[in-house]
Length: 289
Image: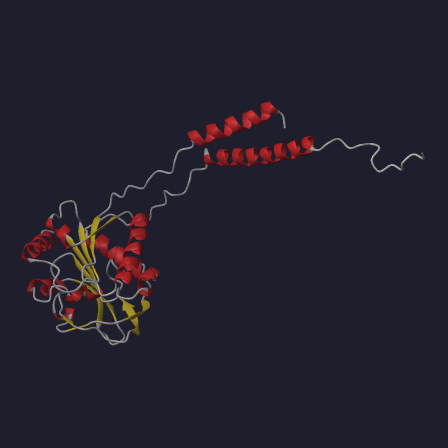
C-alpha cells in the first residue's frame, strides 16, 4: 500500500472519530426518587434492588437518589420517597414530621416488604399505609400466585397472574377495611399490593427476596407505582436514545475497517519486503570439482 493512501486512511479515521457525535447522556426529566434502605434485614437484596431500580430509572425517565434517614431533613427537589425494605425506628420526631408534611403536601411515598413494619410506634405510618402488619413475616418463604387488578395505571400492562416466592406479611386490620385500593391479592385473597386511602402512597408486600427484583412484571409494577406516586400525568415512555445514529457512525466504522485492513496489508507487505531475495542457485547440484 502506498504511503499517500496510508496517510489518507489515517486522516479519514481521525476526522470521523473527532466529528462523530458522542451518544448524548440521558438527562431524566421525570420524578426524582429518594431511596432509603435503613434497617433492612438483607443488605444484599437491598443493594440488588437499588441496582435494578437504577436500570429502570435510566430506561424509564426518572432519577434515583440513594440516601438515608438524614436525607429526609430536606426533601426539596424530591418527588417520591421510597422505603425499600426498611424496618424499625429509623426516623426521629423531626424527620417524622418532615415526611408527614411531605406526603400530606402531595409528595409520593412507596414502600416494599418490611417497610410495613417501619416506625412501629408511629400511628401516622399505619394510618397512611392503610393497614397494620403482623410481624414477623411467614417463615420459610413460600410461592404465591398473585392476582393483579387491572383498573389502575400502576398495574397497566402487567400479566394478570404473577408467581413470587417471598416471606409474606399479613395484616390486621387489612387495607380493605379502609379506603385503600387493593391492586394484587394472594391465592388466599390476602392483599399483596395496594395504594393508601388518602395520599399518593403505594405499598407492596413482595420485595424482600432477591429473585423478586429480577422479575420483569414486578419491576414494571414498582416503576409504575413510582410514576403514579409522583403525580405524573404524562405517559411513561421508554428511553431509546442509546441507539447511535446511522451517520456519521457508519462512516466511522467503514473507515475503521478500511484502516485495519490497510494496516494488515501494510504489515504483510513489510514482511514480504523484509524477506531476502531467493537465491537462484540454491538447491542446484554442485558442480564437479
